[in-house]
Length: 287
Image 1: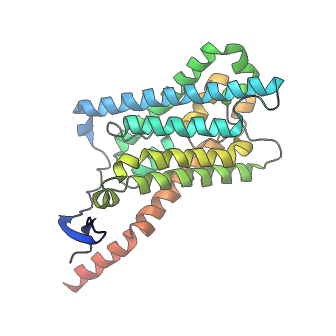
Image 2: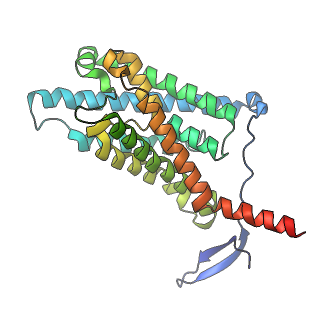
Image 3: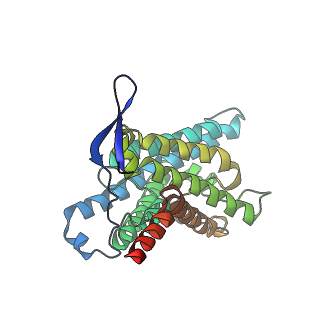
């Protein structure tokens, strides 16, 4: 029996082999100029822009609202837990709404990780990242238009390395947090797993949202939680104070390194890419 045979659970709890064998989809081309002629390409870019705009709009207003209320009442506002719930919940909603159109990236680090794994082309990755950054800027600008005085007073939700933490700690927090997120994305959207478990595509946005929620709980006290270069960039552009740019590179390098590690780990270790490549090499050598 093929190792790729998919099993289905019988009504009595047993497993029955089906005729459906899983085949790994071919890697996306590095450069696919044909995408420029497809309406679905531009629709996906638009969706990434709008989704990132909505994400930053909700995130920034939630942070400002908490800072405003806690300034007069230590126990006021939603607290760090509430911010984490708002961000994780919004990601769950947005991924659910956009996954079938653009893949629901809403994050340059996720896009970069999927590009490294050859899930998307270089052209799509570049345009996604551009749309995400522009969407983040517009989302922060929209939030500022509603809360201009509070936006400036409470730094507009900008990612800033907290006092008492070193640059190394901040960078490590961003790398680890992004690794958790991107690894979850790979696991939740694994096509082999989807072929075996039909419920996985429906549930995929849920673990991704929970990953964002958990990472925010852990790293808000350190960096305010970036793990999304577009989120950090949009907030820094609109706030545009020196403190917003002092350690801004952390919020690009950290997420991209974390995404790369997650992509390599999933493709080489979890999906046994190295073992498959070695096996293929041995087979061809024996012929």
